[in-house]
Every structure is written in C-alpha cells, then in structure tokens.
Length: 199
Image (cartoon, rainbow, N blue to C red; front, side, top):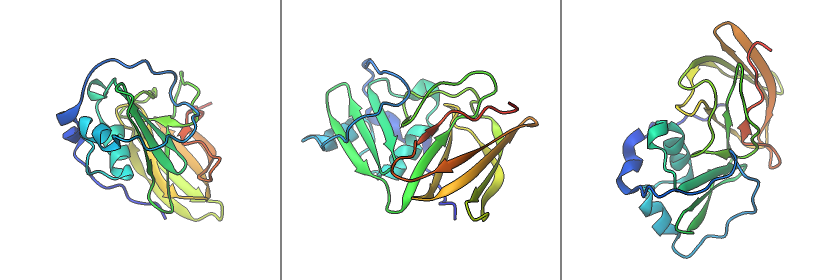
C-alpha cells in the first residue's frame, strides 16, 4: 500500500534560513552515517526545521521552489535515514519512519545526471512541475498507485513506499513512457534518474 504524504506548508522553512554559500559536489554523495553532532538542534533551528520529523523535513525540502532552496544546507536521503549538514559544520542524522522508505524519481526526455542518494537541496531534474501518469505495482502484481502526479519544482517525483519491497514503476508524459524496477531494500538507491521517457 502506498504511504500517503502529509500536506506541509511550503514556506515553513523560510524563517531561519542562513544564506551563505556552501560548496556541494554532485547530486547525492555516498557517505558514511553522520554521527549526531552536539548542536544538532541548532542546525534544525537555524534552517526552520525544529520540531519536524524526518518525513516532514523531506517533504518540506522537496517541495521548495528552486529560488527558495537553501545554499548552505545539504540534505541527503539514505535508505533508512535523512542526513543534514550545513556551512557551520553542524550535522544531524534522523531515522525515517519505521517500515517506510523514500525514493525520488527524475524522469527525463533529453538530459539527466548520475545519482544514488537523493539530495533534497541540490538535485535537479529535467521535467520540473510536470504532470505524469504514475503506475506502481508490487512484485506480486498488486497495484499500489495508478494516478496522475506532478513533479516537484526540482523535477523529482517523491514516493513514500513500504521498506524492503520490490516494485515496477511506469511513468507516462505527453504520450512518452518508461518503466523500471524499483526497490526499497538497504542497498537500493533513493535517487532514480535513469527513466528516459520514450526511449
């Protein structure tokens, strides 16, 4: 069963953003788990995220318009947690909800990039705020999702799914389609950028 996403105000992040530049490499980096730093709450407070659980933080950051995305915050989604670090050297690692996984998909027509762990603040996909017909089935053929969804401002379609499962995802946009296997096990990517529509 697809896990519904809560509605969270998009602009809830703006209160505490500090906009100093931070050099970020790539879309998502393969990193070791971040140890909770002493002022972990300071990081969350500084970026307007205090009081939010990991799922809310992911949904907030994914939904931000591009012009409002913080340049001094890196937030990477791993199979079981979200890791945040900022220009002040603060770090925090928050577990995802029990039994849930997050996979963000950036379908494309012409241009894409390599990605394994999704970066909520730096990843960009080609089809930004575009409607897609989404069809998701389990390995047993059960339909979990069959509806039209819109990609976020960064061009990614975020899916909350049951953990440790295998699926088939099919997307259609302007008559062009693509289909791919998708997994939510501990070794699976959280960033999928290989679905070329109409290829």
